[in-house]
Amino acid sequence: GSQGLQASAAVVSDPKWAQRREAVVGAMRHAWKGYKEAAWGQDELAPRGRHGMKWFGMGLTLIDSLDTLWLMDMKAEFHEAQQWVSSSFHPMHTGNVNLFECTIRIVGGLLSAFALSGEKIFLTKAAETADGMMPAFKTASGIPHSDVNLARGTADDPGPGGNVGISEPSSIQLEYRYLSRATKNGKYAAVADKAMDVLLSLPKRDGLADMFVSSRSGRSAGGRITLGARVDSYYEYLLKQWLQTGKSEDKFRSAWEDAVAGIKKHLVKTSGGPKKLTYIAEMEGGHSIPKMDHLVCFLAGSLALGSVHGAGDLDLAKRLGQTCIEIYDAPTGLAPEIVHFHEHSDPKDIYIKTPDAHNLLRPETVESLFYLWRITGEERWREAGWKMFLAWEKHSKVSTGGYSSVQSVLHIPVSWRDKMESFFPAETLKYLFLLFDDTWTEKLSLDQWVFNTEAHPLPVWKS
Image (cartoon, rainbow, N blue to C red):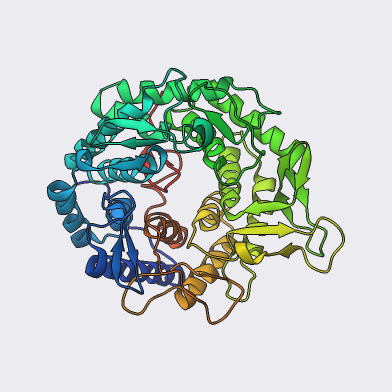
């Protein structure tokens, strides 16, 4: 029917890119086939073993994929998944979940499906899930517990000393603020905003936050300064909360701009090899460490997005985007989980340590390619994404359905880790699709939508 948001039919696409976009839709069909045949209603697919895997017990891949199915016009699959959500998704029967992961993937996935399709069941189930997670916010500090048991209504912090990575309490706000707006119930935004205010008040080093925060005391709990794991989306959500509310809350803009200045002052480095690559280092005790998680590649997209609003740096975004393309220059054409850079003069810029050589089908580079393409219109960002897509097709595609993480990007033939992360259909394939697509450019414009950290688009509101 004509319900919900639809792509623009009148757009005339370049046939080459229309064809490449359809290749990505084909990959989604293949991923979905594997999931539907072997893991329907379960969290994740083991594509080679052809069975489901449990993490939360919430049909994670199904819910994480809803908006991708909608955008790709896989409406039959979308409605079948909707049927499952309506008949078989019971969040209050769920045991332990991680508050942050459940918020960005489940609540975010349901809210995006609601925003795109207009189907109320998704909003109802998002609110039910968030209701089940409310016990996590019963802390004196305002920083929520990291884990919550929905069935029991209990929450705790399995981490040492009740410490959580700062990205967890700081990357739930886009979801809860939109949920409050859509349900006209302010309680969700209230708890998320309280956590954010505590985090904003913590001491920073030129806008840069420590890795850990204590849910008991609400104080910084040390750890290195990084834009990688356990911290990354803290920075992403500073910018995006400012954008989500129609740029009406300056505290977010100033915290984001302080952080960008701190990143430039302390963490932006250049490799010692011939390519002189710009990278983002980590810092511990005042010392710089030339290590960068693939996760950090999100930053190129955020800097580009911010630059459109006078609060980023397009030049740095492009240089970092180029580095993130270079880290795919392994024998398989896939990037490892972590790279190290040569700091001093060396024939090579990048080296990969064996324990870091796996590829989990992560989205951060194609995410940034999407922003860089949308914002600059330079074809090279699209071409780079197509190369990455072909590498996954070649090395990760499992013939019976689904795609698998790879043990090492350095060895051909690859060994599979036999897991398709839910973020592969939710994020990686969605960003590749949008990178090659022209029909959604207007309807899913970056002025009107903000993507959560699991690539779920949520509407921007006018202040």
